[in-house]
Length: 258
Image (cartoon, rainbow, N blue to C red; front, side, top):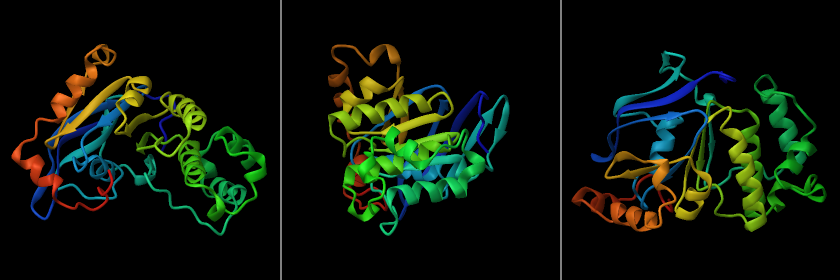
């Protein structure tokens, strides 16, 4: 259930996730607030996608808890539909046109969408040209696939919006359009996106969170635009413990290419 207008937080408490006895997320705690965009930074294999899969309930926890805190009421039994997840690789039905897919999505989710409009309106907002609305999705480019995936995920204004490397497939113009859509989401959702691009995080985020050695650490907003910010982040993420070196050599489900 979407909490429009409510003060909402996503609270992680002592969250732990393991694969084959290897700890990926290690007793991590953090509170994310609605009204902010968080950039999740970490090295390849650090566990960013694993963390997203835990938040979205695609993976069970091995310890700790994740809860929605709404006006003093904690809710651990939230549904996975309360979390919008834009995957790094889209999975859209190629046998439908862009228009047909958005129309179908609206029909299935109409109770969760405010002010429903014609599918073409949404497609245009996402930067899909009118001439492409009735093309099959299998004929869309990689970037167009990602636009449509981001579009339908954002249409429902989920309480939490997770974006896994959301802008890497877009050209400069498309990336600018998507940035505006992402910024508009923070009014209704906790927005967290993972990225390897530090400049993107600086441009778009209210707060940056590092995932390193299985822990979550906040970087204050005041430091994001410091002249030596990039060097500080690189230094922090370059401090490899023995555990991090082992994780980097381990193939973890859903972490490949992260």
